[in-house]
Length: 250
View 1 (cartoon, helix red, strand yellow):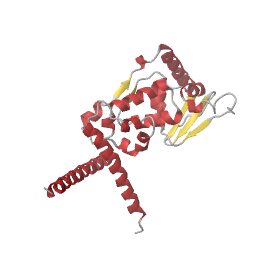
View 2 (cartoon, one colour; view 1 turned 45 degrees about the horizontal axis):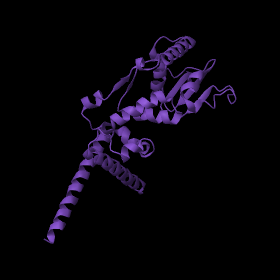
View 3 (cartoon, helix red, strand yellow; view 1 turned 90 degrees about the vertical axis):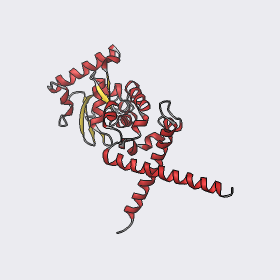
View 4 (cartoon, helix red, strand yellow; view 1 turned 180 degrees about the horizontal axis):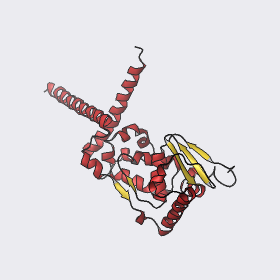
């Protein structure tokens, strides 16, 4: 009888070790491939934010601004958003990101990106032609800009966290951010199996996304919920070990 609890504890500890080893292999796969989901599941998680769901007033304003942009720069199609060499003209501002630049009309920035409201207001604006947004990606910004121009855009497991980060940093209008947060909640379990999640765990440890870690989502099983916390803990442990090893003189 005295040996029974010890045996049970050994079995329990062995079970945890095996589970953790499995999670570490999962993390390695995520880091090498970008995710550990079946390819069809990863692809099916993509959705299109349909412009028909926005108000008529918002759609009309967006189309007018998009047309104005095309006319101002003599452009013809949506691929012109990819141009990085355009200069700011008239009331347009050049936003410089870490991976390129984008030209946006001042009134659009003020209307949908609160972060720019104060520096571009009439009281503080001193002929600002360029703004540095070095920590964010222009590719991510263009997705949001197209949405407000009345163009269908896609959200998926690969770009949604970057979209959330940009919404948070630039204080994007609630209409778009609301849909980003809803997507994260709905696809939370799938998202935790991606490299995007691992690289941005800090965002899920802060309000409001912290609620997803503190309270099990309805569409998440208890086992999946526990695995998510294992993934976070073991990923941090793995990175800490790698950091210590790299700091050891050779």
